[in-house]
Image (cartoon, rainbow, N blue to C red; front, side):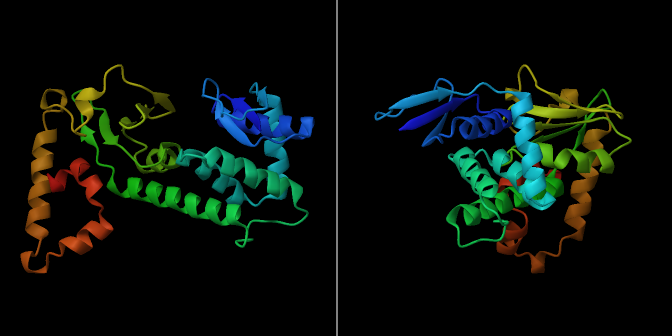
Length: 253
């Protein structure tokens, strides 16, 4: 069994593809640096991430794939599902080797699985755009906590840059312990030294702006006044607004 070890980055994965074609040997398994190798390992190869090599693979894929299919590869990587890197490796290899497009060849198990997983990531990104709720902090920065199933922050940041271009804001992924800060001009990735106090998704009242609590109460009052008790359908509500988002929604507190 041949195993490729790489640094678990997208650039590293593309470098692994480049090296596999250069060596004319393809791995039976992909593992991260430091992972425990399988029992029946016969050969191992250490992939060193290389920007030039990964760039050449990207260029080759852009020539053979539509823009939508290239975006699908990004969605697959951001899924962070177990084995998704090996699925991505197989999909890219089949794309390169095939004289015709494989994008709609759903009889191929890898193509079908790739599309299904990418669709799940896309749906999660759509949910995040709908259910992000900002809270105004004392320093006039709007803060929102999220914990998506998949690593979708890179997919939704442009939406919020356009939607809230006149406000400073932070969107923070509590599950992956990183976020993005927008300062009215640029958007940069950031981390917090201690984010345990944010696990509930709410800012401490001491950190809130003076009028934030008032606006939250006004919003909850509006939500309550618009509710028709006789037409409440909790099953349908959970279908359109999954319960896992409720702890972040001011109107559901």
